[in-house]
Length: 374
Image (cartoon, rainbow, N blue to C red):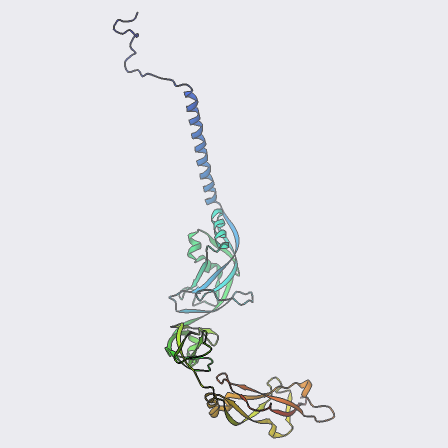
């Protein structure tokens, strides 16, 4: 019977909780349990893939190019590289030389895949350097593996070069030497000019130091058709001497132009000896119809300043040649025939605008084959 003070029935025992079952509550717990299992499996699977990629190294061959250069602080200059292909290796940006190679890399599959994609898309440009301490003493042949494995970009990516083709390259190195002053000059000019500054400092390979020319050439930019007084144009200082690279302190200079009156004066007579071509010497004797024909008497015309160069050193500045052909000018079997040939004149490189005055000069000659020695 219910108590009067508690019409709803007996009180629950002390400390007991009240359980309320929601409709479908068992299914919610079951779904949560299944979701947690899937999540755990996915995480474990991902970890297994990462572990597998990191623990299993692969090997991949990648065709690439890298730029070989000298360390900026080494004081070295890289003159040439021979990779064994027989092809001329062109210069790359920054005084380096680009070399093509087939390289086998070792690393994780993902790292190798990323590396190949970066190299093919040119996102990654491999630069390797020769330093004075590492390669200067044994610079004749350098292993490509050693060069590439010293590259920070590859080391940061966790890949290692295990094979390369070419396996080694041959390099020619020199040291930079500072020449404090060398005069600047223009190659060709039909005007008066001065260069600002007239002299500059320049770094040259040490092998050039004892045979350094007196002048470093300046190439002019666009020259106005009509030059006015104090006309200023830009000039580019040459970065090459005798086929070797140099480093001028200034790459651009100012050239001030002045118009020059082009007088064509005469200088003459000039007596020049007609010379036998070098490839015929030793096989034939050259015979002139008259002995006087081997000396050609000519008059030359040109700008007064250019003719002045010839007055004191004409034999050094201009030479006379005759072009001969043994099939054409050799002695006939039954008669001594002399053949007329035109004399050709060659002026030195620093003589401009000068030419021979009058009709072409002709001499008569024949070639006589020397007896065969027994």
